[in-house]
Image (cartoon, rainbow, N blue to C red; front, side, top):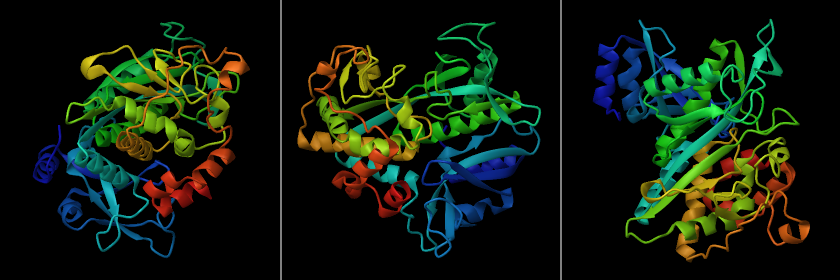
Length: 402
């Protein structure tokens, strides 16, 4: 359900809400929040809630630290793990300067602008994430041990799969929050899990991805476990991916998907820094179904972009390189901008690579471009990119390139 301001005020009054979390993300997509009391809600809607942003990454430091949070009523959600009496709700916020100007490092606002530009061009994007994570045991002090919760494998069942009940609790909690997961299962790594979502409009999909990480961490902790979203938690096991499913449709009815995919592939090396933000991200590439080459194919999981066997409204492409530590607002912004670029250029999609690139000889793989091999190389490529300079504000570029 999408709420209006009046409906939020009514809900808070009628449902015994005692705390309202004003949620936002720093430039890296890490969720932050400040809680207000219900009596402050009218002021939050009319004027915004002031915060000191001096210690928040990318938000300007001590010189321009006074910022305002403006809640988006459409994002109201109950936090079901909080008390039944004295309930807690959450809304995502936009972040502005005192004069009402959106700050450059508010990546949620960047995504809103990208969506608006796409709609003005007569193009509709939708996204859905497949998020992988490991569950590790904690020691007697509550600290993560790096010991997987189980030793199960891909799509195993109980008793080998000990994470089944945790995944069920996560999925049911998400449903209570109005987020509808499609499926969940044990992944290939020991203690590794995956929960998938059906695609939605970009803003909802990004909000849901941020919420998902918070819910998984909370439910894991309630079960005495630690949820690890890092791209390569165990050096000898599969890494965690955030596979992004996307669809692109033109209001005119024209098939713009191939040109959008071509635009994304053409700019992929320049965007990788923002999809893969840590040193460990680059250890994941090229093994255990994680891509290395700039390629696409139908139903082939060794490719960077896979076209699943789906038709009609389910037709989509799957980008397999991002990992769960990326900022979803920034990732979806870049995919929209790159896709629009491909459409505007009438870009032609390269031939499909219908072969296994994990086992192909060097004489074959030499024909394909590669993703950056390290975080340092990804930074260098992004720093030299006219596309990145054009679509991302200096505050965002500076945060990632320093």
